[in-house]
Image 1 (cartoon, helix red, strand yellow):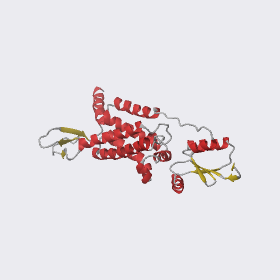
Image 2 (cartoon, one colour):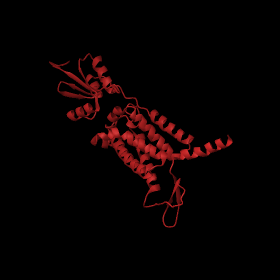
Image 3 (cartoon, helix red, strand yellow):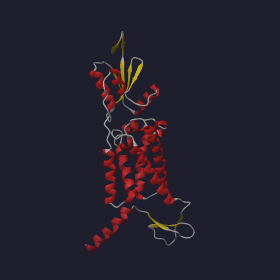
Image 4 (cartoon, helix red, strand yellow):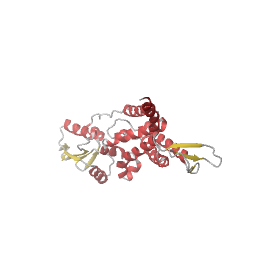
Length: 292
């Protein structure tokens, strides 16, 4: 309870709290209320279903939310302003993003996987970060992603789609599907991040490396998605049916498919049916056996 003038109001706090994830801003709100000796009802939202229902009922997009009686105060920052104290600032850092992409780049370089391999490694690692705490990722992702705000299952599906794209870049299998998927996910991500950062002026954490990261949503997020668009376009250009026609001669090497580009055989591109790093290991294995 809190005394305001002659009235005594019930204070209610709604925050995300589950065994897998505790909302840090909810914990800050709890501490602030206790520091000001305010008795309050602590309503914990323990599942994404409860969170979605709460947001829909009160027409809000974020948690925690604090109510003084029937008056909605808002989130943690609004509560701090109500008490006249400085709010704790979020600590932002691009270090997790740099570490992840740096690791992906080094692995791709060491395994001589090239740019597609780098993209595949990065996407697979990004997907892994999201899947480690899926509920937390979905909560952060829905704050700015335009598709997930309209289609709720998209948030939980996104990491799996990202992982499939990463495997597609690494294996070279189904380049058209991988290219189209990269274009769709990259375009929607670019538009969503750009709108949130430069139009709505939101200050949010980027969900690109998981829901618990302190990486800010900013230019890096926009560029990350733009790179997906570019790589998807490159894959589609290399495998576009209106540029190249599949031709499988009866006496063809079963390991390769030859693409005839135009009527004059302007180019022949050999697409291995197995991942490139597997083929590179075979000569080494054969040589080793020969020496034995």
